[in-house]
Image (cartoon, rainbow, N blue to C red):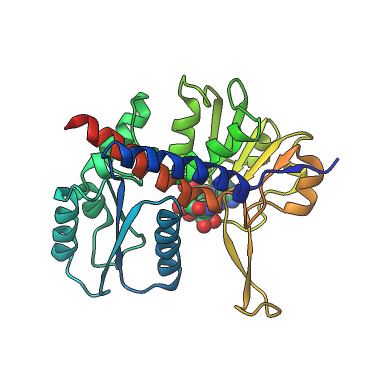
Amino acid sequence: MAAKIISGNEVAAEIRAELKERVAELKEKGIFPGLGVVLVGEDPASVSYVTSKAKGSQEIGMFEETIRLPADVAEDEVLKVIDNLNKDPKFTGILVQLPLPEHISVEKVINYISPEKDVDGFHPVNLGKLLRGEPCPLPCTPHGVQQLLVRSGNDPSGKHVVVCGRSNIVGKPLAAILMQKAKGANAVVTVVHTGAKDISYYTKQADILVAAMGRPQAITADMVREGTVVIDVGVNRIPDASKKKGFRLAGDVDYGPVSEKASFITPVPGGVGPMTVTMLLYNTVESAIRLSQQQ
Ligand code: NAP
């Protein structure tokens, strides 16, 4: 039986509509969420991500400003900009678009963002809180995966979730989110990576399988059990001369054959992708509330 498609576009639209209402209510109470985005250089993919963050903010009625810096900007200058954003109450969330040019330390930059305004959820203080199960901004892509599961009626509680990939931005924080003794979590989580001798041994035991490897179509139908919920985080560019841009996007899952066995599946594009920016908007609104409570 063909899998039901979990549409990230639809879930993201639902969350954005909720956020729009919340922003309007907050503004009436004198709380103004605002997002500061720092863009270094003009990498086309980064420019496109930053544009979608600005558009998303506008859509929910939230203030947003992008600070554009040249690719050869000194690291100190970037830190100064972050310092200003940390101090400026107009900004309840700060995001530095990654990747950064090689001469700038990503760790230094992330550590410099005030944890209260770290809406990417990458600051070590927030990652520590996440592990301890304390309230904190959750990293956006894994949080988006959790929302896709919960809102499609696939609550992970008590399920065996197998996460393929252990990066700091997807695999590790997703495992940390889903293993918590909390609503929308409480799963038994297995994380696989290149150290596993045969990942199919693990993927076949999954109730929920999350692919976040950056390997096009690496998850094939023989690796998936009938009825598994499959979430594809991967975004890979495949050369394709028939496309105007010269490439097409493919996930980490061999979509056609796997969707014949899965009970639910996310497409690429239109699955996890639209959730990432949405959860960033969510974090910025939440952080405005938290900051207002500290005053
Ligand atoms: P990453 O930093 O390259 O990490 C990939 C992880 O997958 C690593 O832990 C690696 O294991 C593991 N891996 C790679 N090949 C494997 C294999 N054959 N078997 C088992 N494990 C394997 O990637 P990432 O940043 O997490 O991103 C993963 C994918 O998600 C990429 O396609 C990226 O574009 C996409 N992504 C999408 C969004 C979105 O918004 N939709 C956001 C972020 C990322 P080792 O640790 O052992 O090397």
